[in-house]
Length: 171
Ligand SMILES: [Zn+2]
Image (cartoon, rainbow, N blue to C red):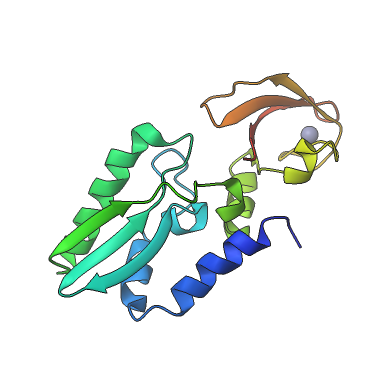
């Protein structure tokens, strides 16, 4: 299995133990503004949903690359939950433990690949090889620039199919 199973499993366990499955399911409909194919849950931003008295509390952890999008994400969550009648409502931002690419779900990694972005590869950072090309699957890839279309991505190129692609940097 992939590196990062632990962070993912902890989040999944928290969700499975929650008394508010309908709220989690509702929030599954919200995707990341910058990567519309991945939900907040799958990306690892959505951490917890709980009740404090009458108040519904949603905990989110910002990604290192999505800070400008966080206001938009909070507004999306508020709108979605208020429409469904979940009030009063509070959104908390949790910075510790910090977001990491290990919090991503296996589905998020697949969706990224389908979207033309190579998913984060922790083994690659440790010198264990190159990320696979999202176009043809080849490992004959090389970095072109540390900076891709956004801060969290690097620009890579595939030597097999010659296509350049964004690589989601692992942290
Ligand atoms: Zn390729």
